[in-house]
Length: 127
Image (cartoon, rainbow, N blue to C red; front, side):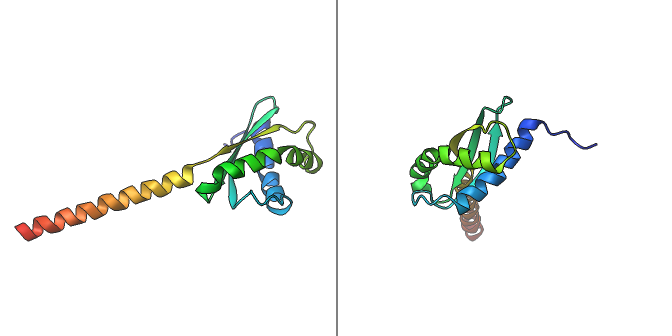
């Protein structure tokens, strides 16, 4: 049985698609680095939207988020022109560190595997 999507989920999905296009094609701020929109959460009353941004250059994460926040008025205005919605939610940009966390987890797993291999290698030589 198909799942019903409520209005806030549909608006969030549309916001994500439109914001990705606007940021990629129309936002000319050099402070905005190479980013991806990982998720958008919209409140039930459609007044606020949390936009989760993955910044692929972690050193520029803070400056990228500040630049996006400065451009939020422009982005809201353009979203209002592109979407058929009465009121465009206020945009709140948040850093999504899941990519960095994933990389760090991969490094830890590789270190654990390497240490197991070296420990197994020394045990075999001793026996």
